[in-house]
Every structure is written in structure tokens, then in C-alpha cells.
Length: 235
Image (cartoon, rainbow, N blue to C red; front, side):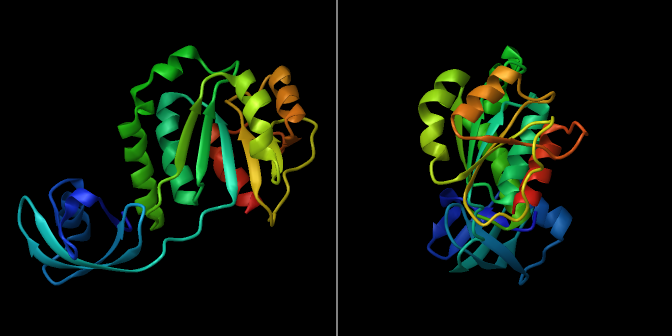
């Protein structure tokens, strides 16, 4: 945890917070904080700043806080992601939050198992928990927007063209396609498929909606690795 992210419920005054949850445990066991220490803080969906530890007890800590500067800029990106397997989904949520992705659209795919959509990790509270962990790592305070689209064809045909409009539309897919571009200087709409890739029918639909297939080489990557590799290459 490189940033203490503060929720509205933590505030007991405009410049005072009390912590009693995992953040307190982290201060005690990892930071080994002491009264008088200064800590980096951010307010969820707000500014970043600093805090001074005023009181530290076994079950709660009180801090004075001030906020001075904006969080880091987000990437100019909309990420369309075929729903990963549940255990990987949690790591992907942390990754996209850490790397500054502002919007993620989770979609269905032929190779996405139906059971994946039943995972409790898609509950709003579970999604938020993983995004917060990613923001704490990156010293960011603004949560990515997560949109769920369970019906692939209606989404791609009816809504995707408007999302792609004015952006560089790309679909990551192994095969005989151009290499993914590097260090682009324009907004991007990027679609990443499930492990094993999109099926040809899905690639055709994505192309018809404005996405150009690109690849990272012959190796087949796990979804979380592909997300990191593609974003690092693009930006």
C-alpha cells in the first residue's frame, strides 16, 4: 500500500479521519507507524495529500489530513475485455486500476464459460475492493468505470462503433496481423479476448465495428499478461 485511500465515512471532521479496518492493520504491521509520522493519503474520487498520525491505538488511529494535488492522469483508453476466469479477474481489476485505465467494458465471448458470469467477484463491492487495492499501489484516487455487457453481438454491432469513433481501434489477437503499435499519441479503444483468443466470427464483428487486429508475437499470453504488455507497448 503506497497510499492510504480515505472514504467519506472515515471523516469525523473536514481535516480529521479515524481508521479501524485493514488500513489500520497495514499502518501497524507494515509501515510500523508511530504518532507524529507523515503518510501519503488520497480521498476516493478526490485529491491527494498528506496526513499526520495524531493517535494510534490497538483498534483505531486518528489522523489530520490535507489535500493539495490532483491524482495522476488516466490513460486515453477504453479497454474491452472478454471476461477472464474468476481468480484472474481479481488480478486484472487491480492491474487496470494500477495502470490508469479509466474505463473497462467486460464482454462475453464464445470461449468465456457461462459459469464465469456467476462469480461473486463481479458483485459491485468485490469489484470495488480490487480496484481500491490497485489505486493504493499506484497512488491514484479515481476508480475506473466498470461496465458489464453480457451480450457480445448486440454490444459490438449497436454500441461499439460510437465508442470507437475518434479513437484508434485495436483488437489484440494472435495470428498473421500487424504488430501492435508503440507509443501512440491518440485515444485508443482496445479489445482483448479470452485465453485462446477470439474466435474468427468475433474478430470479424470487431473489425466491422472499427477495430484493427494486432498481435504481440507468436506466444500465447495469459489475459493479465496481455493487458499489461499491450498497455505498456501502446503508452
